[in-house]
Amino acid sequence: MPAAWSFTAMVTLVISQAHSEAARFCGNALRARALLSLREATYRGPCVAGRWLMSTLVSRFVGLLSLALFAAPSQAQTPPPPAGAPVAIQMVTQLSPSIPQYTRVDIPMLREQIGARSGGRITTTLASWPERNLTGPDLIRVLRAGQIDLAGMALPTVAGDVPLLDIIDMSGQNTSHEQGRKIAEAMLPILNQELERFGVKIVAFYPFPAQVLFCRDPVTSLADLKGRRVRTPGGSQNDFIQSVGGQPVAIGFPEVYSALERGVVDCAVTGTATGNGARWYEVTRHLYTLPIQWGIAAYAVNLAWWNRLDAPVRDFLQGYMKEVEEAQWKLGLELTEDGIQCNSGNAAGCKIGHVVTNRPMVVTRATPADVALLREALTKVVLPAFVKRCGARCGEIYNRVVSPISGVSYVAQ
Image (cartoon, rainbow, N blue to C red; front, side, top):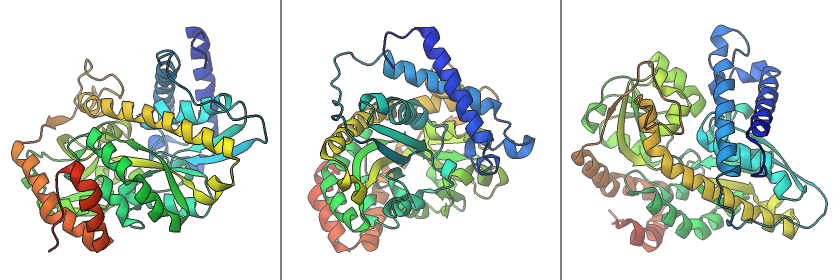
């Protein structure tokens, strides 16, 4: 979208696109029932999605403004490929259509702008996981099978198939987003070598906000998790939750809302703003802000499809996905505190998400003792369990590549 477009023109575009999106969902009512953001439709009749439509319209408009009006004019952009045969790309990226990673980055950049940016060479079909009735572990499998060309994968959810993926963001490992990004970039060549046997290649990393606890009942320290059922995305979070006496439960992200609502689980771990986007504040009352992980994820492609692309198209996509990556990291850095402020009902501090005005959540900041306990669990429980799942060579890789950045070493037991 050109920066010179008028405010009115942009509003008109966003409204038109939002109506088209709503019509598409309503035309697929059976599949829409599985969509997390349209959960109310199952209780109030098919396709009653007024609140979702309005939030989508607003989020889309803000995302377009930020990308079109406020981007630095001097920012280098990937040049388009030369004229040639059109390329259609099937993409499934985020775990919910209502989270900022989707509304503020993926939709504008991977659906609305990529065609013009590629000189008309590329068209995309973009969807979120629930729109394709997929869960995290499914992504690497459908990508490997060639059913989609590009996927956004939350790494802990696919670590069951590729345990080495857990190495980037293990529970208690990264003290910041920045540290997690350094580890991800250092590990990229090794991870892509590992993924070759799955026919998959990572082309970019991106973060979610700090992964924290959303709970139905009060949590003032990790000791309160003893005996509680806690939904995790898998991997090292399971090890950590068990180490403090909790019971990890595997539930796909689209089903977590109802699991919390019905008391199937007592708590669930996700990003501060991710839980806000998924409206977990409606089914939980307490937010414990210990950053168990930083939710580092990856955009990955089907390797055979990637290698078949014309070299100029592949080069454009590699460069363009790095632009997407930068936009996601910038957003991720802003979302942790924004999610806390939005969930707690602080309108002044809530700039990106939805401010909770009806029954705002009770926020408890992590105690220094729990921060230390999390770090201790990394060395005593999480790292040994990771090596047990992944194999001795993974411990060697950790000490050679990750340890110089994390400051923690694996000691064979």
